[in-house]
Amino acid sequence: MAALRLSSPTDGAAPAGLSSFDAATAQLVEHDDSVLVPALKVLRQLIRNVVQNPKNEKYRTVKVANKALEKKLWPLAGTRELLVSLGFVGMLVDDESVLMCLDVNLEAFSAALEFIESRMPAPSSPQPPPSSTTPPPASDAPRSSSSRAGAAEPVGISAEEVARRQVAMRAVEADRREQRKRAVQEFGSDHKGKQRAKSPTGKMSGGGGAGGGG
Image (cartoon, rainbow, N blue to C red; front, side, top):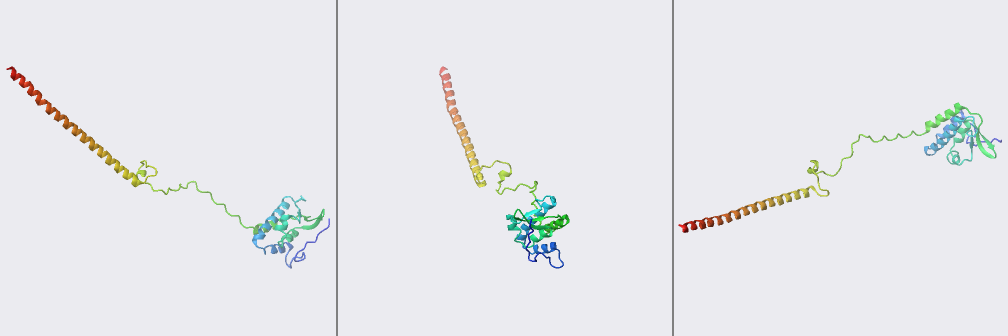
C-alpha cells in the first residue's frame, strides 16, 4: 500500500498554538450553515460507525471518490483535516484512494462527536395534539325561536315564511268555523219554520171535524 499525501491550505501543519483537531474545527465553523450542516451529518455518521465498530476495517475505511463525500464533504475546508486529526491516513487500496484509520482513539472520536453535535441545529419541537376536550365549533346558521323551543322547522323555509303560513292557516280555520256556524243556524231556522207551518193546519182540520159532527 502506498501512502497518499493529503493536500491542505496549511500543507498539513496546524497553526501555531493549535492542535490539528482545533485547526480543522476552526476552518469548519467559517462555513455557512447551509453547507456546514449537511457536511457535519456525513462526518457524524462516519465517526459513529468507527466508535460502534472500532475493530471493523470496513468502517475505518473511507473511499475518497464516494459521490456523497465529493458533493457534501470534500468541497469544505476542514472536513478532510478533521478526519486526519482523528488518525485517518491517505492510502491506496486496490488502486483506489481511501482514508483509513489505523489506530482508533475513542477519546478523540468522542471529542469530535461532541463538537459536531454542538454545531447541529436544535430539533424542532413537535406540535401538541389537539385537546380532546375542545368543544365542537358552533354552527353559524341562525336558529329561529321555534327551533330553540324544540319544534320542527321546515327545511329551506325562512322564519318569516313559516309565520306567514301559520297566520294563513289560522284564517282558514276561522273561516271554516264561521261557515259551520252559519250552516247550523240556517238549518235550525228552516226546521222550526216548517214545524210552525204544519202544526196549525193539523189542529184546524181536527176542530172542524168535531164541530161538523155536533
